[in-house]
Length: 403
Image 1 (cartoon, rainbow, N blue to C red):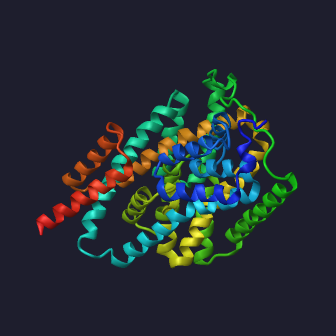
Image 2: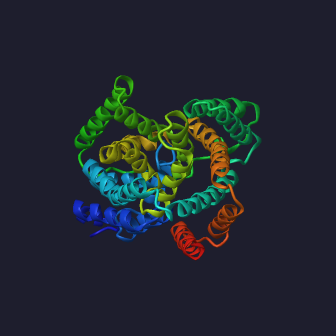
């Protein structure tokens, strides 16, 4: 008799990959999460509990959560090649669109109407980041301990301390302060409810894929240590951000900003804000902004290098964590480390908000755009894409009326 999830056996690699390509082509922002869940669950490839288990798992290690979830589901369903190809074709549409936007931006950015449009977009980004900051504060600043960590991260960034050092400080503070200001949250069981059962495909073939990916991971570390060309630095910089930053695009944004704007001066703060706006108005993951950064540095080759460097670490992590998740998901040290990191990222987001606002909100009209985007996204729950479309259309109309 066919069981509820026998559809997994009938699922072809082509069907799985094409489904993720469609999601990457049509879904925006957090809608991606819902579309992945709907596709996987409605087709009965995995159960609701199994997908929820994956959502809990991908929050335990660095990388963009939505991309990690897609890799997790496809790896479970079709092994290493399912995970690799689904992730690649999920990212492909947004990469191509971002590449086209980057070409237009850096080729024709001096056209008279471009500047007011991007000033509007930059202002709206500030409003949206403020909305995200409030959400993160509500979610993660829920004790005096997390408030201390967030404040420390904010102050350290003001002095341009390396973000990786800030992460280590946050973990240390969380573990240390937990002993001085305890709570009972770590004595509770982990929220996940269903064990990860046997994975699809032979264990030996999955192991070969993990070993090959690990060799690439080590190779990038080698490049970072010994190759000091511009492209080598670009690859390693994006790799570092993708390898250590938790959460989603907004939590990773502070690290990306410090690496690209502060440390290497590859982009101005205004260009960085424009890249963020492009990441919002293109489908797929927000961190496709890395393509914009790479194109600015080395054209087409740079866009490939930067995109690969950003997304490869979390792909590699997902393969490993999927295999061992049952054994680590209740470890209190891991849970404490993540709590400290998320508190620090909230403070780092405050720094991003401050620095973006200082550059972007230099007139009353731009302040109005920031407030408007904040109200629309927070209280009217309007899709971010529509907010940007409204802003662009309104600014173009005002530009034509003015001259």
